[in-house]
Image 1 (cartoon, rainbow, N blue to C red):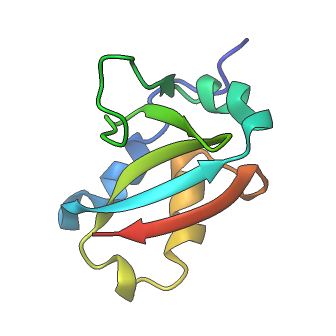
Image 2 (image 1 turned 135 degrees about the horizontal axis):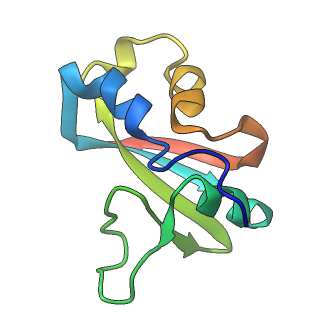
Length: 106
């Protein structure tokens, strides 16, 4: 499959959050399985068998309950940014229609 953009697609996102990056706060994006090729085209790779499940490296995804889970760190002030997800998704190259659900945790 032809790559849609030059990976890594998440560089713009991390440039946006870098000034207030918080390694303990995580954005989880659950992508519908029919969009796996698009996720791969953005530069994501399936979680390596040697990695611990649930312990993501930037640029990896894991299949959980039939969905593709991608995790990225959040800005430390993410709760104060109106429509954080609407701003973050385009920077990650991920389209809203690909997503089943999103969650935030720290």
